[in-house]
Amino acid sequence: MTSRWERIARAQAGADYATTYADRFARLAADGQDVHGEAALVTRLLAPPARVLDAGCGTGRIAVRLDELGYDVVGVDVDTAMLDVARRDAPQLSWVEADLATFELGATFDLVLLAGNILPLLEPGTLDAVAARLAAHTAPSGRVVCGFGLDAAHLPGDCPVTPLADVDAAMAAAGLVAREPLATWDGDPYDGGGYVVTVHERCERIGA
View (cartoon, rainbow, N blue to C red):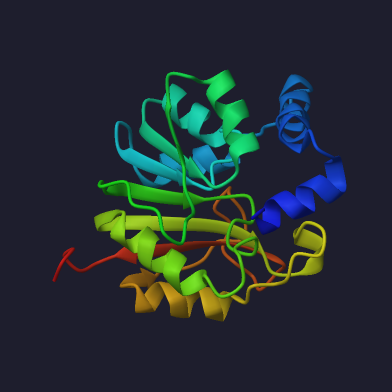
């Protein structure tokens, strides 16, 4: 079964969507644009060599940058084609093919990162299960950071909106406490706009 992301990506970019996606960011970087906002936020939240899980890592752009900055990073994604590009470009890193609703890595991380509209692109009805798996992979006092659109202008294709209140409720049920959300990866305070970067912290002891 294809994922919601794959269905949208194929409709927009064709069968070679993974390479098209990676090439777009490569062109932006070559043109001098900053494509590392997500990694820059990670550096403001914790220092290397902290452990970071790039959940929904895609072609690996963020994980590769975090590795360059000295973080101990693992990437996980359900999309085989996207991971093929990641493995081609950074074979030295750990790339895991798995569904975020069911994955089990047997490890915890200081920060779990979900960029690129991962939450709205989840399969219907899986948000609670995904939140539980993210919490299970977050170390005590660790954070889960998610960036996603809240309106059609910030979402791909016909991707439905996932309300911020639903995300906070799912994270709370999984034991993750909401901190002040941000409006951008630059760290601007959230102002109620169409894009949000949420920060949730695991405050209790794992297994308590």
